[in-house]
Image (cartoon, rainbow, N blue to C red):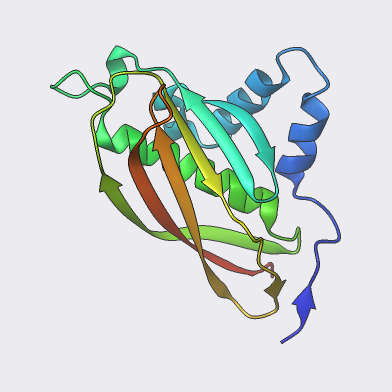
Length: 162
């Protein structure tokens, strides 16, 4: 197996870095992301931080994401986890590779009645070779007090681009 080192950053990470120099750059990036993947728009996310090995996304607790109990809906939490995990994966893998989520295990630990933040983190960052691999991405969805009310482990299939 040949080990591939990232020669170039992903297009998304390069765009993120460029837009960070502008006022409202994070907002612009998030709007573009939600244009490309419209389902994420349902939680009204805002990317706060993106770099290899880390993505942090926040969202308000608004009526459209509440369940019948008035708390942040479980599936909205999964949406936040997938957004953070996907963007972190995209920023982490070499530009010569691609990824797709193939599974997600989720634990609902508590109720949240506040705005939320999803944090996907890989430490250490693995090396990617020519052979396809399954990358497990841990994501915590936190309430405003920093308590993880949902944890997810997203399995990403990572392979070389054709």
